[in-house]
Image (cartoon, rainbow, N blue to C red):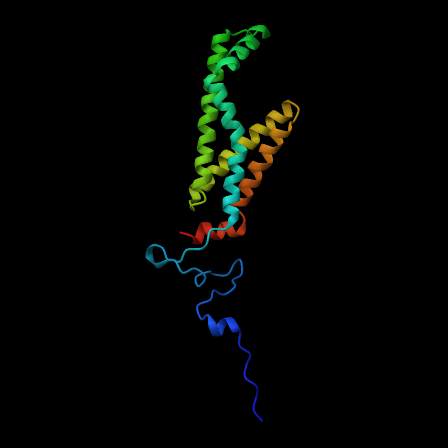
Length: 184
């Protein structure tokens, strides 16, 4: 009596080069057909990286608008700000305070643009860009938390805080880590 032959998978018979399922932590050298410099195999970019950069972008957009308004003080905004400063009875002159608001707006613009650039460069993968985006997102989160402690928390501030935290977390998930260290 003979033993029956081992069952074969149809995919193995018809597609000898079909990629195998790989675990999250298993090497993915056979999975990708592209090869980079030095013959190193590239790992596919996980969607978590894109989502993290998108969340950080959404968290930074209100700061970009605020920084632009403070730096440029266009039309009615500048007039209203000057009127508010004058009517508050501040000990400094209105011109000095307006200059300080402009400087703060420029600083906010620079930090926000740096966060946006680093968030999208982290997707490439660049570890230093991811670290820089993390630091700037932490600065944003601490600033938002301080503002929310002093004033009443609003929906925009809470949304920005949650988006910044979620964006950083997505950049450090296991598949993002694997991509960061094996994708080069």
